[in-house]
Length: 110
Image 1 (cartoon, helix red, strand yellow):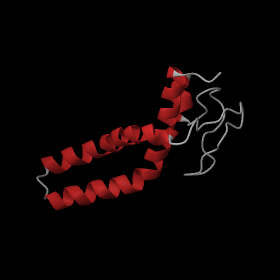
Image 2 (image 1 turned 90 degrees about the horizontal axis):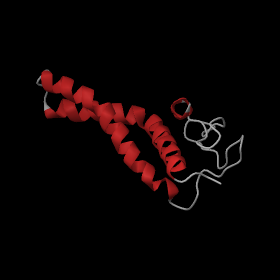
Image 3 (image 1 turned 90 degrees about the vertical axis):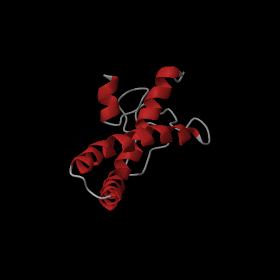
Image 4 (image 1 turned 135 degrees about the horizontal axis):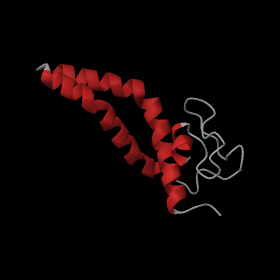
């Protein structure tokens, strides 16, 4: 149930309300249960680590393919840069969603 809520970017508390209202716009509170997503200032700084993991995962396959094709370093840099630029809004969304769900599991809201 929680995995489905994470994949659909739903509230970590009630698993129903949407976390985002647009591509990069995030609700301050859950539209269903009303919990505040950002518990304190700087709360989402930890989501950066999930962003690193997601970005690295997105870059692995193209890097391996380019190594197999013996492409130059310029191709590596250009390909990975384009992929990460195109995926950055989704990496941002899922990194925050992953952090919210992990935090809810470790320290549930009252």
